[in-house]
Length: 478
Image (tube, rainbow, N blue to C red):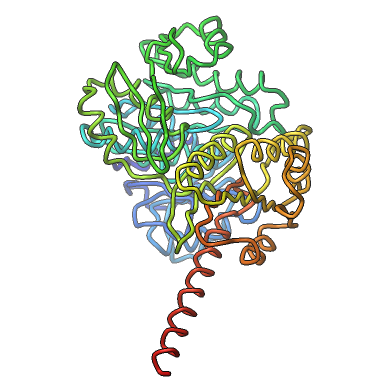
């Protein structure tokens, strides 16, 4: 954040100073909602959460050098402090108001991305490519809600060329609020699919929610959408008077990807007759690359430069990331899960299994927020796993038995599957099921915490290696 006058902050959060004797000459150099990481000169917004209340840490923030504290209820400060305390109606809303104003001051091209799957990967890939040509800033982690988005906007500098934002939602109306705050020059809808059904109810409601990102796009801005989804294309063109570019594999798309192929941890696709090599696993990542190209070409990046940049991109942590753990091949897709991302990951596992000849194992956490369709969608997940050639299924969580039910109906023998109450139990039993040279997909919703299985796999292999070294030393002594 570029420094602003304290008075500017007060005006834009619509606040009132609560301590008349405070020093109002300070400049604000940034914002923070975490008293543990506050830096001198930052404004501390005291936000109430489910398990904490930032107002209880106001003094701690001041002790670390906060320029001011923004609160929605009075806080008691020791007499020795003259740090301004700014009262507002709601600190989260005030944070959003400040971000809306600060966005209006930025000269950067703002790119906002939404969709049921692929948001974070598309954002990261865009940043890796665009950073070769522009000063590019992106969200830290998946900062895609009513707190994370304003924090990302407020982290931008006035000399940034590109600001990449991610807009998420699990209830109707959230994206409309965020897009008006962001006011993007460019907006992207990666894919619409069943996710957060608990909050939306139907796929049609999800489509309308994702499409609402168009409400905030500047009048001369561009909206990029997945042209392989005719319902989305029709709805957008009928509802929103915005310039639209479609990307996909269909012949009627504006930007077309052809001959999408995957081989193990890599793949390729053809764009405008040129083969683009992609050092990432899975067809979904090839579509992510196509999405990125549709934007880059309008930012005056040549296809040759794009192809070169893509060859050096790095995998995104816990998103179809391949690890060699001893003799095991592990496909780490732990970050989150919904029916489409599960299908993508299983297809990738199938491809790797065919290529390597190893036994395929699915360590499955449950998919969250699917509402009344949870049972059915988990049964379909089990059946799809069998259709993709999975030979062993280990499932954990509330709908683990439904996953196994679907797998059993699809023909997987009962002695090749087991359900566990939680991820911890699954981890404790991994050693009973795995063989050398297995290929293991580990995936589940964020709430499942399936990364614990990756940690346990490393521990098991390290223990085996230590045991092997010990046995070798014993043999040498003999």
